[in-house]
Length: 136
Ligand SMILES: [Zn+2]
Image (cartoon, rainbow, N blue to C red):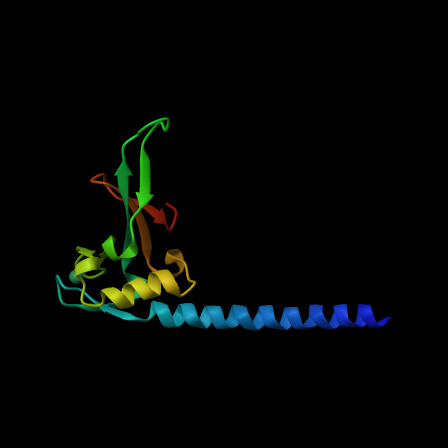
């Protein structure tokens, strides 16, 4: 085996070790995030994030110029909603006293909403929310 083959083999081996360790750490991270407790301002019950629903709100832009059709854009997390697993109330994240923590978990931890919440929904304007996770 020449030196280049040996280095390639070492690199491949280290890559496999790194990927396996990364998968374990990400799985542990998801477990920690899912256990984070959020309080409900409506019923005053605290529940782990894994039991809450998340509603991604979308805002509408009229067709203009050469663009045709409706344009729906995803709202920032801070102006989305959570669904309390205890009372079912839709909670506006912006007014929640743990808003910054919720936004950090949802936006900055490299974890998808499907991996955090019990259910994930899309809501376009005033239309009824549609569940996207788990797929029905
Ligand atoms: Zn509640």
